[in-house]
Length: 601
Ligand SMILES: [Zn+2]
Image 1 (cartoon, rainbow, N blue to C red):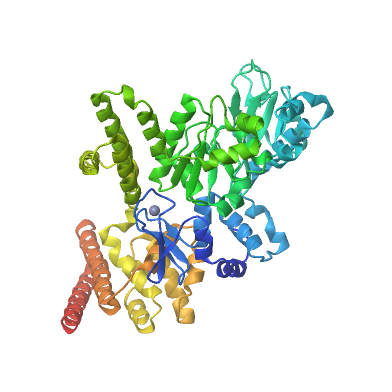
Image 2: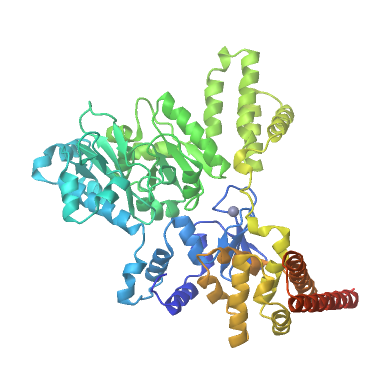
Protein backbone atom coordinates (compact mmCIF):
# COMPACT_ATOMS: atom_id res chain seq x y z
CA UNK A 1 0.00 0.00 0.00
CA UNK A 2 0.89 3.59 -0.28
CA UNK A 3 3.51 5.28 1.76
CA UNK A 4 1.27 8.26 2.46
CA UNK A 5 0.88 8.23 6.24
CA UNK A 6 -2.54 7.42 7.68
CA UNK A 7 -2.56 10.75 9.51
CA UNK A 8 -2.42 12.59 6.16
CA UNK A 9 -5.21 10.44 4.78
CA UNK A 10 -7.30 11.22 7.84
CA UNK A 11 -6.60 14.91 7.40
CA UNK A 12 -7.72 14.78 3.79
CA UNK A 13 -10.84 12.86 4.64
CA UNK A 14 -11.74 15.37 7.30
CA UNK A 15 -11.31 18.24 4.83
CA UNK A 16 -13.08 16.70 1.85
CA UNK A 17 -16.71 16.79 2.90
CA UNK A 18 -18.49 13.88 1.26
CA UNK A 19 -21.65 15.86 0.51
CA UNK A 20 -19.66 18.56 -1.22
CA UNK A 21 -17.70 16.05 -3.29
CA UNK A 22 -20.65 13.85 -4.28
CA UNK A 23 -22.79 16.89 -5.14
CA UNK A 24 -20.44 17.49 -8.03
CA UNK A 25 -21.77 14.27 -9.57
CA UNK A 26 -25.22 13.64 -8.13
CA UNK A 27 -28.13 15.96 -7.34
CA UNK A 28 -28.80 15.32 -3.66
CA UNK A 29 -31.94 16.11 -1.72
CA UNK A 30 -32.41 16.17 2.01
CA UNK A 31 -34.01 13.03 3.49
CA UNK A 32 -34.06 13.20 7.27
CA UNK A 33 -30.54 13.47 8.55
CA UNK A 34 -29.22 11.99 5.31
CA UNK A 35 -29.29 13.04 1.67
CA UNK A 36 -30.76 11.08 -1.18
CA UNK A 37 -30.20 10.98 -4.93
CA UNK A 38 -30.21 8.86 -8.05
CA UNK A 39 -27.38 6.35 -7.91
CA UNK A 40 -24.58 7.16 -10.35
CA UNK A 41 -23.57 3.50 -10.48
CA UNK A 42 -26.77 1.93 -11.70
CA UNK A 43 -29.82 2.99 -13.65
CA UNK A 44 -32.75 3.90 -11.44
CA UNK A 45 -35.80 6.10 -11.37
CA UNK A 46 -36.43 6.42 -7.66
CA UNK A 47 -33.44 7.40 -5.54
CA UNK A 48 -31.88 4.71 -3.39
CA UNK A 49 -28.47 6.32 -3.11
CA UNK A 50 -27.94 7.66 0.41
CA UNK A 51 -25.23 9.98 1.66
CA UNK A 52 -24.68 10.50 5.35
CA UNK A 53 -23.03 13.84 6.20
CA UNK A 54 -22.71 12.77 9.81
CA UNK A 55 -20.89 9.52 9.04
CA UNK A 56 -19.23 10.75 5.84
CA UNK A 57 -20.25 7.70 3.85
CA UNK A 58 -22.57 6.77 1.00
CA UNK A 59 -24.49 3.64 0.21
CA UNK A 60 -26.82 2.56 -2.57
CA UNK A 61 -29.63 0.30 -1.46
CA UNK A 62 -30.21 -0.63 -5.09
CA UNK A 63 -26.86 -1.94 -6.23
CA UNK A 64 -25.03 -2.26 -2.92
CA UNK A 65 -22.16 0.07 -3.75
CA UNK A 66 -20.92 2.12 -0.87
CA UNK A 67 -17.98 3.55 1.00
CA UNK A 68 -16.37 6.84 1.86
CA UNK A 69 -15.27 9.81 -0.19
CA UNK A 70 -12.21 7.90 -1.46
CA UNK A 71 -14.27 4.96 -2.71
CA UNK A 72 -16.67 7.28 -4.44
CA UNK A 73 -13.98 9.05 -6.43
CA UNK A 74 -12.12 5.83 -7.22
CA UNK A 75 -15.31 4.41 -8.65
CA UNK A 76 -16.54 7.44 -10.58
CA UNK A 77 -13.21 8.75 -11.87
CA UNK A 78 -11.74 5.29 -12.45
CA UNK A 79 -8.54 6.20 -10.68
CA UNK A 80 -6.59 4.54 -7.89
CA UNK A 81 -6.70 5.27 -4.19
CA UNK A 82 -3.39 7.11 -4.29
CA UNK A 83 -4.58 9.33 -7.11
CA UNK A 84 -7.74 10.21 -5.24
CA UNK A 85 -5.62 11.10 -2.22
CA UNK A 86 -3.33 13.24 -4.35
CA UNK A 87 -6.22 14.98 -6.15
CA UNK A 88 -8.10 15.74 -2.96
CA UNK A 89 -4.92 16.91 -1.28
CA UNK A 90 -4.38 19.42 -4.04
CA UNK A 91 -8.09 20.41 -4.13
CA UNK A 92 -8.09 21.15 -0.42
CA UNK A 93 -4.61 22.60 -0.20
CA UNK A 94 -3.17 19.85 1.95
CA UNK A 95 0.54 19.33 1.48
CA UNK A 96 1.73 15.78 1.07
CA UNK A 97 5.27 14.98 2.18
CA UNK A 98 7.39 15.53 -0.90
CA UNK A 99 9.18 12.22 -1.20
CA UNK A 100 5.85 10.48 -0.75
CA UNK A 101 4.17 12.24 -3.59
CA UNK A 102 5.62 9.87 -6.08
CA UNK A 103 7.36 7.07 -4.31
CA UNK A 104 7.93 3.89 -6.26
CA UNK A 105 5.27 1.79 -4.62
CA UNK A 106 2.72 4.58 -4.83
CA UNK A 107 3.21 4.61 -8.59
CA UNK A 108 -0.12 3.99 -10.16
CA UNK A 109 -0.45 1.10 -12.57
CA UNK A 110 -2.19 3.45 -14.96
CA UNK A 111 0.41 6.21 -14.70
CA UNK A 112 2.59 4.34 -17.15
CA UNK A 113 -0.21 4.55 -19.72
CA UNK A 114 -1.19 8.14 -19.01
CA UNK A 115 2.41 9.33 -19.19
CA UNK A 116 2.99 7.55 -22.50
CA UNK A 117 -0.09 9.28 -23.93
CA UNK A 118 1.17 12.64 -22.69
CA UNK A 119 4.48 11.98 -24.43
CA UNK A 120 2.67 11.02 -27.64
CA UNK A 121 0.46 14.11 -27.48
CA UNK A 122 3.53 16.29 -27.02
CA UNK A 123 5.19 14.63 -29.98
CA UNK A 124 2.16 15.13 -32.25
CA UNK A 125 1.77 18.77 -31.21
CA UNK A 126 5.41 19.52 -31.95
CA UNK A 127 5.05 17.94 -35.37
CA UNK A 128 2.10 20.15 -36.25
CA UNK A 129 4.04 23.33 -35.78
CA UNK A 130 7.20 22.14 -37.48
CA UNK A 131 8.36 23.79 -40.67
CA UNK A 132 8.40 20.59 -42.71
CA UNK A 133 4.76 19.90 -41.94
CA UNK A 134 3.09 22.91 -43.50
CA UNK A 135 0.23 20.83 -44.85
CA UNK A 136 -1.60 19.82 -41.67
CA UNK A 137 -1.37 23.29 -40.16
CA UNK A 138 -2.55 24.83 -43.42
CA UNK A 139 -5.45 22.40 -43.44
CA UNK A 140 -6.53 23.62 -40.00
CA UNK A 141 -6.06 27.25 -40.98
CA UNK A 142 -8.04 26.69 -44.15
CA UNK A 143 -10.86 25.45 -41.94
CA UNK A 144 -10.43 28.81 -40.21
CA UNK A 145 -9.46 27.53 -36.81
CA UNK A 146 -7.37 29.92 -34.78
CA UNK A 147 -3.98 28.78 -33.51
CA UNK A 148 -5.20 29.50 -30.00
CA UNK A 149 -8.01 26.96 -30.31
CA UNK A 150 -5.70 24.43 -31.96
CA UNK A 151 -3.29 24.80 -29.05
CA UNK A 152 -5.95 24.78 -26.37
CA UNK A 153 -7.29 21.43 -27.54
CA UNK A 154 -3.79 20.04 -27.99
CA UNK A 155 -4.36 19.18 -31.63
CA UNK A 156 -1.36 17.60 -33.31
CA UNK A 157 -0.12 15.82 -36.37
CA UNK A 158 1.07 12.25 -36.82
CA UNK A 159 3.70 12.43 -39.58
CA UNK A 160 3.69 10.30 -42.68
CA UNK A 161 6.27 7.88 -41.35
CA UNK A 162 6.37 4.28 -40.14
CA UNK A 163 8.54 4.80 -37.09
CA UNK A 164 8.97 8.43 -36.05
CA UNK A 165 6.73 8.07 -33.01
CA UNK A 166 8.56 4.89 -31.97
CA UNK A 167 11.93 6.59 -32.23
CA UNK A 168 10.73 9.54 -30.18
CA UNK A 169 9.26 7.26 -27.54
CA UNK A 170 12.47 5.27 -27.27
CA UNK A 171 14.24 8.47 -26.30
CA UNK A 172 11.56 9.06 -23.68
CA UNK A 173 12.20 5.50 -22.44
CA UNK A 174 8.59 4.49 -22.99
CA UNK A 175 8.32 0.72 -23.32
CA UNK A 176 7.18 -0.91 -26.56
CA UNK A 177 4.69 -2.94 -24.56
CA UNK A 178 3.01 0.26 -23.36
CA UNK A 179 2.74 1.66 -26.89
CA UNK A 180 1.15 -1.56 -28.11
CA UNK A 181 -1.30 -1.52 -25.21
CA UNK A 182 -2.35 2.01 -26.16
CA UNK A 183 -2.67 1.10 -29.83
CA UNK A 184 -0.09 3.71 -30.85
CA UNK A 185 2.02 1.12 -32.62
CA UNK A 186 1.25 -2.27 -34.08
CA UNK A 187 3.25 -5.45 -34.71
CA UNK A 188 4.21 -6.06 -38.32
CA UNK A 189 2.47 -9.02 -39.98
CA UNK A 190 5.68 -10.33 -41.48
CA UNK A 191 9.21 -9.86 -40.26
CA UNK A 192 9.99 -8.35 -36.90
CA UNK A 193 9.25 -5.02 -35.33
CA UNK A 194 6.37 -2.60 -35.13
CA UNK A 195 4.95 0.30 -37.11
CA UNK A 196 3.31 3.59 -36.09
CA UNK A 197 -0.44 3.18 -36.21
CA UNK A 198 -1.33 6.83 -36.87
CA UNK A 199 0.29 8.20 -40.01
CA UNK A 200 -0.39 11.43 -41.87
CA UNK A 201 -3.34 12.30 -39.66
CA UNK A 202 -4.55 15.30 -37.68
CA UNK A 203 -4.51 14.10 -34.09
CA UNK A 204 -7.17 14.98 -31.51
CA UNK A 205 -6.20 13.95 -27.98
CA UNK A 206 -9.03 12.50 -25.86
CA UNK A 207 -8.96 13.74 -22.30
CA UNK A 208 -10.87 12.50 -19.26
CA UNK A 209 -12.95 14.89 -17.17
CA UNK A 210 -9.92 15.44 -14.98
CA UNK A 211 -7.82 16.27 -18.04
CA UNK A 212 -5.85 13.05 -18.34
CA UNK A 213 -4.83 11.91 -21.81
CA UNK A 214 -6.61 8.64 -22.44
CA UNK A 215 -6.45 8.20 -26.22
CA UNK A 216 -6.51 9.81 -29.67
CA UNK A 217 -8.71 10.31 -32.66
CA UNK A 218 -6.89 10.76 -35.97
CA UNK A 219 -8.45 12.35 -39.04
CA UNK A 220 -6.98 11.57 -42.43
CA UNK A 221 -5.32 14.37 -44.40
CA UNK A 222 -5.53 12.60 -47.74
CA UNK A 223 -9.05 11.73 -48.83
CA UNK A 224 -7.99 8.34 -50.20
CA UNK A 225 -6.69 7.11 -46.82
CA UNK A 226 -8.99 4.77 -44.94
CA UNK A 227 -10.70 5.13 -42.57
CA UNK A 228 -11.65 8.79 -42.39
CA UNK A 229 -11.32 8.71 -38.61
CA UNK A 230 -9.03 6.30 -36.81
CA UNK A 231 -9.43 6.10 -33.04
CA UNK A 232 -7.33 4.59 -30.26
CA UNK A 233 -8.57 1.14 -29.31
CA UNK A 234 -10.11 0.73 -25.89
CA UNK A 235 -7.55 0.21 -23.14
CA UNK A 236 -7.26 0.12 -19.37
CA UNK A 237 -7.68 3.89 -19.38
CA UNK A 238 -10.01 4.45 -22.33
CA UNK A 239 -13.58 3.25 -22.70
CA UNK A 240 -15.18 4.52 -25.85
CA UNK A 241 -18.74 4.78 -24.59
CA UNK A 242 -17.72 6.63 -21.44
CA UNK A 243 -15.94 9.58 -22.96
CA UNK A 244 -17.18 12.82 -24.48
CA UNK A 245 -14.71 14.83 -26.51
CA UNK A 246 -14.03 18.29 -25.12
CA UNK A 247 -15.92 17.78 -21.85
CA UNK A 248 -12.90 18.55 -19.69
CA UNK A 249 -12.68 22.03 -21.22
CA UNK A 250 -16.41 22.66 -21.05
CA UNK A 251 -17.38 21.67 -17.51
CA UNK A 252 -17.28 25.14 -15.96
CA UNK A 253 -19.32 26.75 -18.74
CA UNK A 254 -21.82 23.87 -18.82
CA UNK A 255 -22.44 24.31 -15.11
CA UNK A 256 -22.65 28.06 -15.39
CA UNK A 257 -25.26 27.96 -18.15
CA UNK A 258 -26.90 24.71 -17.07
CA UNK A 259 -26.83 23.67 -20.69
CA UNK A 260 -24.61 21.50 -22.82
CA UNK A 261 -24.56 21.56 -26.60
CA UNK A 262 -23.95 18.11 -28.03
CA UNK A 263 -22.38 18.06 -31.48
CA UNK A 264 -21.25 15.22 -33.67
CA UNK A 265 -17.72 15.92 -34.79
CA UNK A 266 -14.47 17.44 -33.59
CA UNK A 267 -14.69 20.29 -36.08
CA UNK A 268 -18.21 21.26 -35.00
CA UNK A 269 -16.95 21.48 -31.47
CA UNK A 270 -13.82 23.41 -32.36
CA UNK A 271 -15.83 25.88 -34.47
CA UNK A 272 -18.18 26.61 -31.58
CA UNK A 273 -15.32 26.88 -29.11
CA UNK A 274 -13.48 29.14 -31.54
CA UNK A 275 -16.52 31.44 -31.69
CA UNK A 276 -16.63 31.64 -27.93
CA UNK A 277 -19.43 29.11 -27.35
CA UNK A 278 -17.70 26.89 -24.86
CA UNK A 279 -20.38 24.68 -23.33
CA UNK A 280 -19.98 22.07 -26.05
CA UNK A 281 -19.06 18.40 -26.19
CA UNK A 282 -18.76 16.06 -29.16
CA UNK A 283 -20.11 12.53 -29.21
CA UNK A 284 -17.59 11.61 -31.95
CA UNK A 285 -20.02 9.48 -33.88
CA UNK A 286 -23.76 9.79 -33.78
CA UNK A 287 -24.89 7.28 -31.17
CA UNK A 288 -24.47 8.20 -27.56
CA UNK A 289 -24.52 5.73 -24.71
CA UNK A 290 -26.33 5.76 -21.41
CA UNK A 291 -22.99 6.24 -19.62
CA UNK A 292 -22.25 9.32 -21.68
CA UNK A 293 -25.70 10.62 -20.83
CA UNK A 294 -25.10 10.07 -17.16
CA UNK A 295 -21.75 11.77 -17.45
CA UNK A 296 -23.49 14.88 -18.79
CA UNK A 297 -26.07 14.68 -16.06
CA UNK A 298 -23.36 15.26 -13.49
CA UNK A 299 -22.99 18.80 -14.76
CA UNK A 300 -26.34 19.87 -16.17
CA UNK A 301 -30.01 19.03 -16.58
CA UNK A 302 -30.35 20.38 -20.13
CA UNK A 303 -28.91 19.01 -23.36
CA UNK A 304 -29.19 20.65 -26.74
CA UNK A 305 -28.45 18.30 -29.62
CA UNK A 306 -26.91 20.04 -32.63
CA UNK A 307 -26.32 17.41 -35.29
CA UNK A 308 -26.14 17.66 -39.07
CA UNK A 309 -29.24 18.79 -40.92
CA UNK A 310 -29.42 15.66 -43.09
CA UNK A 311 -31.79 12.79 -42.45
CA UNK A 312 -29.15 10.70 -40.71
CA UNK A 313 -28.36 13.59 -38.38
CA UNK A 314 -32.01 14.17 -37.52
CA UNK A 315 -32.78 10.53 -36.80
CA UNK A 316 -29.60 10.25 -34.69
CA UNK A 317 -30.70 13.31 -32.73
CA UNK A 318 -34.09 11.75 -32.06
CA UNK A 319 -32.57 8.40 -31.04
CA UNK A 320 -30.17 10.09 -28.66
CA UNK A 321 -32.90 12.27 -27.22
CA UNK A 322 -34.72 9.12 -26.14
CA UNK A 323 -31.70 7.87 -24.22
CA UNK A 324 -31.19 11.25 -22.58
CA UNK A 325 -34.84 11.82 -21.73
CA UNK A 326 -34.97 8.48 -19.95
CA UNK A 327 -32.24 9.82 -17.71
CA UNK A 328 -34.58 12.69 -16.88
CA UNK A 329 -32.60 15.26 -18.78
CA UNK A 330 -34.43 18.05 -20.61
CA UNK A 331 -33.55 17.57 -24.24
CA UNK A 332 -33.82 20.01 -27.13
CA UNK A 333 -32.94 19.67 -30.77
CA UNK A 334 -31.41 22.37 -32.88
CA UNK A 335 -32.71 22.64 -36.41
CA UNK A 336 -29.89 23.61 -38.64
CA UNK A 337 -30.93 24.58 -42.18
CA UNK A 338 -29.76 22.14 -44.88
CA UNK A 339 -27.14 21.45 -46.05
CA UNK A 340 -25.26 22.64 -42.98
CA UNK A 341 -23.66 21.20 -39.92
CA UNK A 342 -22.81 23.50 -36.97
CA UNK A 343 -19.30 24.07 -38.35
CA UNK A 344 -20.35 25.15 -41.83
CA UNK A 345 -23.38 27.06 -40.55
CA UNK A 346 -21.30 29.29 -38.28
CA UNK A 347 -18.64 29.77 -40.93
CA UNK A 348 -21.25 30.99 -43.38
CA UNK A 349 -23.70 32.82 -41.12
CA UNK A 350 -21.72 33.75 -38.04
CA UNK A 351 -22.12 33.22 -34.33
CA UNK A 352 -25.19 35.47 -33.88
CA UNK A 353 -27.19 33.44 -36.39
CA UNK A 354 -26.24 30.30 -34.50
CA UNK A 355 -27.35 31.80 -31.19
CA UNK A 356 -30.66 32.63 -32.86
CA UNK A 357 -31.01 28.96 -33.83
CA UNK A 358 -30.42 28.06 -30.20
CA UNK A 359 -33.27 30.35 -29.17
CA UNK A 360 -35.53 28.53 -31.64
CA UNK A 361 -34.71 25.06 -30.33
CA UNK A 362 -37.52 22.52 -30.13
CA UNK A 363 -38.20 19.48 -27.99
CA UNK A 364 -37.84 16.06 -29.66
CA UNK A 365 -41.58 15.61 -29.26
CA UNK A 366 -42.39 18.84 -31.08
CA UNK A 367 -39.92 17.96 -33.76
CA UNK A 368 -41.71 14.69 -34.46
CA UNK A 369 -45.09 16.37 -34.17
CA UNK A 370 -44.13 19.05 -36.68
CA UNK A 371 -42.97 16.49 -39.19
CA UNK A 372 -46.30 14.67 -38.93
CA UNK A 373 -48.53 17.73 -39.05
CA UNK A 374 -46.45 19.02 -41.94
CA UNK A 375 -47.76 16.19 -44.07
CA UNK A 376 -51.24 16.06 -42.50
CA UNK A 377 -53.06 16.87 -45.72
CA UNK A 378 -51.71 13.77 -47.39
CA UNK A 379 -52.35 11.39 -44.49
CA UNK A 380 -55.19 8.89 -44.50
CA UNK A 381 -57.05 8.18 -41.24
CA UNK A 382 -55.12 4.96 -41.01
CA UNK A 383 -51.79 6.80 -41.30
CA UNK A 384 -52.90 9.37 -38.74
CA UNK A 385 -53.84 6.64 -36.33
CA UNK A 386 -50.44 5.06 -36.68
CA UNK A 387 -48.67 8.40 -36.29
CA UNK A 388 -50.58 9.15 -33.08
CA UNK A 389 -49.68 5.73 -31.74
CA UNK A 390 -46.04 6.35 -32.51
CA UNK A 391 -46.11 9.70 -30.75
CA UNK A 392 -47.78 8.19 -27.70
CA UNK A 393 -45.40 5.28 -27.73
CA UNK A 394 -42.45 7.66 -27.56
CA UNK A 395 -43.96 9.10 -24.38
CA UNK A 396 -44.31 5.76 -22.65
CA UNK A 397 -40.69 5.69 -21.55
CA UNK A 398 -40.60 9.30 -20.32
CA UNK A 399 -40.06 9.39 -16.58
CA UNK A 400 -41.68 12.79 -16.04
CA UNK A 401 -45.51 12.73 -15.75
CA UNK A 402 -45.89 16.48 -16.11
CA UNK A 403 -44.08 16.45 -19.42
CA UNK A 404 -46.22 13.55 -20.59
CA UNK A 405 -49.32 15.57 -19.70
CA UNK A 406 -48.09 18.62 -21.59
CA UNK A 407 -47.19 16.63 -24.67
CA UNK A 408 -50.50 14.78 -24.78
CA UNK A 409 -52.27 18.10 -24.51
CA UNK A 410 -50.27 19.44 -27.45
CA UNK A 411 -50.89 16.31 -29.47
CA UNK A 412 -54.60 16.63 -28.84
CA UNK A 413 -54.62 20.20 -30.15
CA UNK A 414 -52.55 19.57 -33.24
CA UNK A 415 -54.24 16.36 -34.28
CA UNK A 416 -57.71 17.55 -33.24
CA UNK A 417 -58.40 14.49 -31.12
CA UNK A 418 -60.06 14.80 -27.69
CA UNK A 419 -57.49 14.60 -24.90
CA UNK A 420 -59.28 11.89 -22.92
CA UNK A 421 -59.14 9.54 -25.89
CA UNK A 422 -55.41 10.08 -26.11
CA UNK A 423 -54.94 9.49 -22.39
CA UNK A 424 -56.90 6.24 -22.57
CA UNK A 425 -54.81 5.13 -25.52
CA UNK A 426 -51.60 6.12 -23.77
CA UNK A 427 -52.51 4.11 -20.69
CA UNK A 428 -53.22 1.08 -22.82
CA UNK A 429 -49.84 1.37 -24.54
CA UNK A 430 -48.14 1.80 -21.20
CA UNK A 431 -49.86 -1.29 -19.82
CA UNK A 432 -48.57 -3.30 -22.73
CA UNK A 433 -45.06 -2.04 -22.13
CA UNK A 434 -45.13 -3.08 -18.50
CA UNK A 435 -45.44 -6.77 -19.20
CA UNK A 436 -41.69 -7.16 -19.34
CA UNK A 437 -39.29 -5.18 -17.21
CA UNK A 438 -36.63 -3.76 -19.48
CA UNK A 439 -33.05 -4.81 -18.97
CA UNK A 440 -31.91 -1.40 -17.78
CA UNK A 441 -34.44 -1.41 -14.98
CA UNK A 442 -33.26 -4.71 -13.58
CA UNK A 443 -31.08 -4.24 -10.57
CA UNK A 444 -27.66 -5.84 -10.53
CA UNK A 445 -27.55 -8.98 -8.43
CA UNK A 446 -27.21 -8.37 -4.73
CA UNK A 447 -23.75 -9.18 -3.39
CA UNK A 448 -23.46 -12.70 -2.11
CA UNK A 449 -22.55 -11.58 1.39
CA UNK A 450 -26.02 -10.37 2.13
CA UNK A 451 -27.74 -13.73 2.52
CA UNK A 452 -29.59 -14.46 5.73
CA UNK A 453 -27.15 -16.62 7.62
CA UNK A 454 -24.71 -13.78 7.86
CA UNK A 455 -27.31 -11.30 8.96
CA UNK A 456 -26.44 -11.82 12.62
CA UNK A 457 -22.74 -11.21 11.95
CA UNK A 458 -23.59 -8.02 10.13
CA UNK A 459 -25.89 -6.82 12.88
CA UNK A 460 -23.21 -7.37 15.49
CA UNK A 461 -20.81 -5.14 13.56
CA UNK A 462 -23.53 -2.51 13.15
CA UNK A 463 -24.17 -2.64 16.89
CA UNK A 464 -20.48 -2.24 17.70
CA UNK A 465 -20.38 0.79 15.43
CA UNK A 466 -22.98 2.48 17.63
CA UNK A 467 -20.15 3.02 20.11
CA UNK A 468 -22.33 2.35 23.13
CA UNK A 469 -20.21 1.18 26.00
CA UNK A 470 -22.51 -1.27 27.74
CA UNK A 471 -23.63 -2.81 24.50
CA UNK A 472 -20.13 -3.22 23.09
CA UNK A 473 -18.86 -4.70 26.35
CA UNK A 474 -21.65 -7.22 26.35
CA UNK A 475 -20.95 -8.23 22.76
CA UNK A 476 -17.18 -8.40 23.08
CA UNK A 477 -17.49 -10.33 26.30
CA UNK A 478 -19.58 -13.03 24.73
CA UNK A 479 -18.37 -13.32 21.16
CA UNK A 480 -14.98 -13.97 19.64
CA UNK A 481 -13.47 -13.86 16.17
CA UNK A 482 -14.14 -17.60 15.86
CA UNK A 483 -17.88 -16.94 15.90
CA UNK A 484 -17.64 -15.22 12.51
CA UNK A 485 -17.71 -17.14 9.25
CA UNK A 486 -17.84 -14.35 6.71
CA UNK A 487 -14.30 -13.15 6.19
CA UNK A 488 -14.77 -9.40 5.76
CA UNK A 489 -17.08 -9.33 8.77
CA UNK A 490 -14.62 -11.40 10.79
CA UNK A 491 -11.85 -8.95 9.92
CA UNK A 492 -14.02 -6.05 10.96
CA UNK A 493 -14.88 -7.71 14.25
CA UNK A 494 -11.23 -8.44 14.89
CA UNK A 495 -10.19 -4.90 14.09
CA UNK A 496 -12.99 -3.27 16.12
CA UNK A 497 -12.48 -5.47 19.16
CA UNK A 498 -8.77 -4.67 19.25
CA UNK A 499 -9.40 -0.94 19.06
CA UNK A 500 -12.08 -1.25 21.69
CA UNK A 501 -9.70 -3.01 24.07
CA UNK A 502 -7.10 -0.32 23.62
CA UNK A 503 -9.22 2.82 23.61
CA UNK A 504 -12.73 1.93 24.73
CA UNK A 505 -14.31 3.24 21.55
CA UNK A 506 -14.24 2.96 17.75
CA UNK A 507 -13.19 5.75 15.43
CA UNK A 508 -15.63 5.29 12.53
CA UNK A 509 -13.91 7.69 10.20
CA UNK A 510 -10.57 6.03 10.61
CA UNK A 511 -12.11 2.61 10.22
CA UNK A 512 -13.82 3.49 6.93
CA UNK A 513 -10.69 5.07 5.57
CA UNK A 514 -8.58 2.10 6.59
CA UNK A 515 -10.85 -0.35 4.75
CA UNK A 516 -11.77 2.01 1.96
CA UNK A 517 -10.37 -0.19 -0.78
CA UNK A 518 -11.45 -3.56 0.50
CA UNK A 519 -14.63 -5.62 0.70
CA UNK A 520 -14.95 -4.54 4.32
CA UNK A 521 -15.49 -0.96 3.22
CA UNK A 522 -18.69 -1.83 1.36
CA UNK A 523 -20.09 -3.53 4.46
CA UNK A 524 -19.11 -0.65 6.67
CA UNK A 525 -20.90 1.93 4.57
CA UNK A 526 -24.14 0.02 4.71
CA UNK A 527 -23.89 -1.01 8.33
CA UNK A 528 -23.18 2.53 9.43
CA UNK A 529 -26.46 3.59 7.84
CA UNK A 530 -28.63 0.91 9.45
CA UNK A 531 -31.33 2.32 11.68
CA UNK A 532 -31.42 0.15 14.77
CA UNK A 533 -34.53 0.50 16.89
CA UNK A 534 -33.97 -1.89 19.79
CA UNK A 535 -30.22 -2.40 20.04
CA UNK A 536 -30.30 -4.44 23.27
CA UNK A 537 -32.83 -6.86 21.91
CA UNK A 538 -31.00 -7.18 18.60
CA UNK A 539 -27.69 -7.76 20.38
CA UNK A 540 -29.12 -10.48 22.60
CA UNK A 541 -30.67 -12.13 19.58
CA UNK A 542 -27.56 -12.07 17.45
CA UNK A 543 -25.21 -13.12 20.23
CA UNK A 544 -27.51 -16.06 20.88
CA UNK A 545 -27.61 -17.05 17.23
CA UNK A 546 -23.87 -16.81 16.71
CA UNK A 547 -22.99 -18.56 19.96
CA UNK A 548 -25.44 -21.32 19.20
CA UNK A 549 -24.08 -21.73 15.69
CA UNK A 550 -20.50 -22.05 16.95
CA UNK A 551 -21.43 -24.52 19.68
CA UNK A 552 -23.53 -26.61 17.28
CA UNK A 553 -20.67 -26.65 14.87
CA UNK A 554 -18.17 -27.78 17.47
CA UNK A 555 -20.60 -30.39 18.76
CA UNK A 556 -21.02 -31.94 15.32
CA UNK A 557 -17.32 -31.78 14.68
CA UNK A 558 -16.50 -33.75 17.82
CA UNK A 559 -19.10 -36.35 17.02
CA UNK A 560 -17.63 -36.71 13.55
CA UNK A 561 -14.10 -37.11 14.94
CA UNK A 562 -15.22 -39.71 17.46
CA UNK A 563 -16.94 -41.71 14.73
CA UNK A 564 -14.05 -41.56 12.34
CA UNK A 565 -10.92 -41.88 14.41
CA UNK A 566 -9.76 -44.89 16.28
CA UNK A 567 -9.19 -42.65 19.25
CA UNK A 568 -7.51 -43.73 22.44
CA UNK A 569 -9.54 -44.21 25.60
CA UNK A 570 -8.14 -40.96 27.02
CA UNK A 571 -9.06 -39.00 23.94
CA UNK A 572 -12.57 -40.35 23.93
CA UNK A 573 -13.00 -39.39 27.56
CA UNK A 574 -11.76 -35.93 26.71
CA UNK A 575 -14.21 -35.55 23.84
CA UNK A 576 -17.12 -36.81 25.89
CA UNK A 577 -16.30 -34.26 28.53
CA UNK A 578 -16.26 -31.50 25.95
CA UNK A 579 -19.60 -32.66 24.53
CA UNK A 580 -21.14 -32.45 27.97
CA UNK A 581 -19.72 -28.98 28.40
CA UNK A 582 -21.14 -27.85 25.08
CA UNK A 583 -24.56 -29.25 25.93
CA UNK A 584 -24.42 -27.39 29.18
CA UNK A 585 -23.46 -24.13 27.52
CA UNK A 586 -26.14 -24.56 24.90
CA UNK A 587 -28.86 -24.99 27.47
CA UNK A 588 -27.44 -22.03 29.36
CA UNK A 589 -27.57 -19.63 26.44
CA UNK A 590 -30.98 -21.01 25.53
CA UNK A 591 -32.26 -20.23 29.00
CA UNK A 592 -30.67 -16.85 29.08
CA UNK A 593 -32.19 -15.99 25.74
CA UNK A 594 -35.65 -17.10 26.80
CA UNK A 595 -35.29 -15.06 29.96
CA UNK A 596 -34.30 -12.03 27.94
CA UNK A 597 -37.15 -12.41 25.47
CA UNK A 598 -39.69 -12.71 28.29
CA UNK A 599 -38.30 -9.69 30.13
CA UNK A 600 -38.58 -7.61 26.97
CA UNK A 601 -42.05 -8.65 25.87
ZN1 LIG B 1 -26.76 1.94 -7.10
